[in-house]
Image 1 (tube, rainbow, N blue to C red):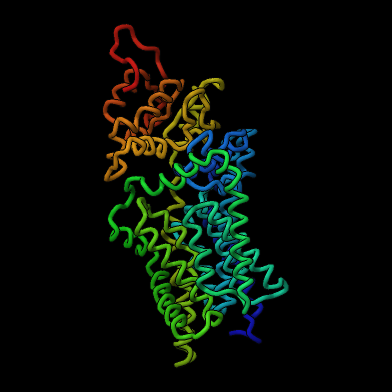
Image 2 (image 1 turned 180 degrees about the horizontal axis):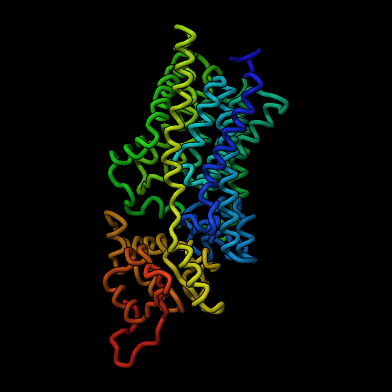
Length: 518
């Protein structure tokens, strides 16, 4: 299946075809009369995009608004955010979604290229198929999330660090890999796992100077991307990024067993079976081969996968979409497992090998059904909500929302009011206020029941002309806060749908027991 140690010439065309299919699968829900804005909006993508757009307007994370991740994503997401900062935020948000689909297609090529160069054409095609159809990563690569950027950089790092040297000298490849590792750490703390796995796998050459070059490049990249913004408000940076993430209450799937089940969900059952075989092969080769050079790809992918799983089991919060960061190593392991199974079968009899090849190619395609099911989600209320806000809220009025993405769809960035927090991330803002009291909570719901979580948010709502409450607002406001809110705000409903609502701040009624926020 190889010629002179290199895969046959058909493999780039196979990877290109899979990458096109991956892009179509991600962009499919955007081919709708509402375009990219008609697909369901996620809380996190609204936070990341709004924060990046505000950065263009001169507001700095940590100093001017709360942001609970390192700032790398805000800087690297700047092109689409600039459109929203200086034009219509809805247009920029749509552009960011389209760009994310392109990142997914490139990552599909990088997965396939790495697996194909390391373990052969079967591994490459199966790994690319597994990544292209991975349901969670397909969903995340439809918006300005952290995961598309992390996967792209991580897979680029692996291609530069692990594959045999070509035209680029080894020192240059080590520096490129280090820069990409630094970018990942500047986007999300867990992104540092890929850099650690690269060092565990091997130094790409006999000299330790290459490992030092990798570490120095990564360190300088982190300093360049994080340093200027962190030094602008060092105390707030430590509080928002490090303390908050370590002290936050449990949320999402809290049971560790249920988290493990989500990471091995049946929607990816056949790709996961191949990945399980690949993990066993990778561990066996890593133990059996005497030098790091001989099993570097296996060491890297196994370390990345196992460390990420362990991090998710230990984390304070976990949702199933976190599995998007597992898609890269999981797909590489699936490719390795497929190559091992086909090689084992072909050694017995050529027809058996052909049957095995067909089966392993079909395995990842099982996940396409689940990915297509997600592409069907087009909530009409979301589009109607944006239209209603544009019609009802004057340009000079302030609009607050518990879902940042809803304001973006209506062409609104989070408001900046004197003396009030900027509601880029109301969820984290209220949780941090609860934690600042010194209390500890078993879960997020208990934290939102605390009076300390309510005060700053209610003071902000008191100054906003209009509010988008929604289900998230219903959850995050306590019973006392709900009573105050209802007494001081009037609800209006769109004639197009009873599910579309907007709350307008009203002057206190004479004699009404409204007073100040509780």
